[in-house]
Picture (tube, rainbow, N blue to C red):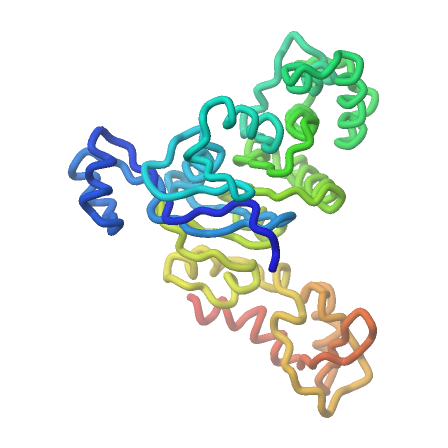
Length: 342
């Protein structure tokens, strides 16, 4: 059983003077419209899930869906109105201020959309700053900060001031600063949304490289479905404070749980998201000579498969045949889903 690092049980966040009383009177059956009529806004509605060690959970939804509010509850920047939140088994809502500050300083890293760099400090000084707050000696904090500068690819710019950097470079400083304290848990709230598309793609690639190396437990907020598909181990899609579906990217695309999720996914280019193993058949008969890897993205091998008359063997990393896929399945996967959805 994989170790659970973050665990939420029936978490609610309701804004308004009568929030706690109304939640208690509702017995957990929160109707956003009724609450709104009584002067309350429902931010998070009965969220229950776990995030495993080293997993990247991407929470997505449109503006106002509750995704940032959920993240703020889990980092306790906002206090939840009801429910339980555990961080590595500790009951977050029972911690006193001192323990909460210790947890944030030693376990959590946070990156937000606004870079919030200190304009009068250089890159390396900005990165070293949280370490110095923790009481690390200046010399040691600068040494650690220089390691982070290299990690995020800003060598040679360590003595620049924020105003001398591009948006993407400033975001890298923000990421390096949050990593300097070596957090086990990393919260990122739309960290790339202010960047132009090309820099954004570079940052996503850089982020995946860092995660492969560091294996942090991550909650990543975005409203961009392509970004979610690229980064996530699992995706939670939120609407009106409710988690509509929490699943792997492939399952969300292939088996949307609600009409809302289906609409969210209908324009997704499936061939860029799904792997061969997501759509292959288990049969191993009447196969041609071509073999494709089960972990290959469909787009990369579709052309080769479509030239075959027979089904194509699907193999694992040890070259063992684990299934098959025929050209018709590729056509149906790429085009059938969109046709059925429209």
